[in-house]
Length: 200
Length: 200
DNA sequence: CCGCTAATGCGACGTCAGTTGCATTAAGAT
DNA sequence: ATCTTAATGCAACTGACGTCGCATTAGCGG
Image 1 (cartoon, rainbow over the protein chains, first blue to last red):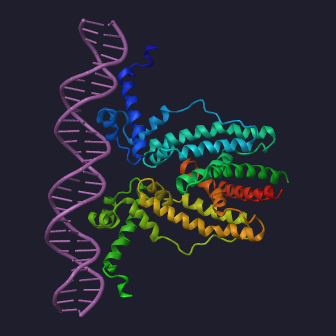
Image 2 (cartoon, each protein chain N blue to C red):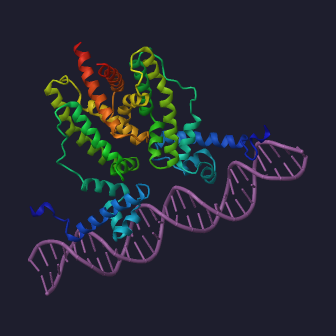
Image 3 (cartoon, protein in one colour):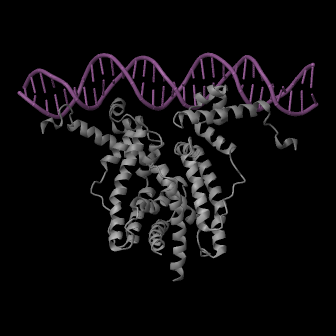
């Protein structure tokens, strides 16, 4: 058990430094946004030396990735509303909230993912986890008989959430919450419509 | 007509320099991708001096924006296949091609849009133009009686294309061309389903 | 052909992100 | 309490990016 940490030292100071730095990252992000997020700025605000930040986090993206992991919720499960449409609407509202928050850490990490591979990887990992957890929504609908058994969970989930991401992140076009619901309903209707056409 | 260019000089050399630089941008993009695209690299390859590139294009994003404008097609119109589904599939295939090309200038500009506002603006402008041109697809379907008159063209188009962008650009998950067709069909089915539910 | 001047070439400079070698501090073990 | 050694602090260095002032070139009008 002692060799669980043979050479590392996760002791008090190290943990304190990490906490200070991550707090500074979040604060800087809030004030200046991602573009104003700089390692020097984080170092000054946190009271930790530049070199230390460079050594442990390497890049701005690394800081964001660590922040993402620190705030990670491993217990997350999609809401169970009793219907496919309800479940998808609940999912889309979560996505909507995450993307329109101020500041949106998700938006910041997306931006970072286009700069460094590590951020891209962390984000891909995060989404892969979320989408596979969300697959139960589709499974429940199949069990209920709402959808054909052959329905591809990932495709359906992307059909529901993709339009929100596209409009808010890429098209940068503001959107009322109701539109997020609309995209969820469209995905549900399409999936059910697909069932209909396959059976007809 | 002479005062259309009162002080500027779009003469031979200037045009030649621009052509050389843009060619170099495309070549560098092909070889090193967006992340390896540097102003110095473009300057060396094009044989134009660093300072000139900085003065005329300012940033890497500026170079991409100019490349985008140079290759711009102002005569573009969506294909007319005779059905909503066919039209959306045609649209989605174009999007798919643009995003999976090697190298994809679209992907490069998207990445650039997260770094500099000018690139973001150019991209927004480009997409705004494309989506408004594509609205006729929806109008034709309305005229045919395929869709209710109240259908929102933009929402429908985003429903069709959004999932492709999301999966290929953000989720970074490869996708066979058939899936692009699938998303187009889903959007068509949903829009028609919406009609049905409104009338029922 | 000649003069004007915009556009480009050129070198030097300033700035800043990121790195490196060494000194210092403090966590953890004895 | 003492020792060992990660982890951090510190200062100087490197190199790339971007800028500036001035010299040179080459459109374009006469």
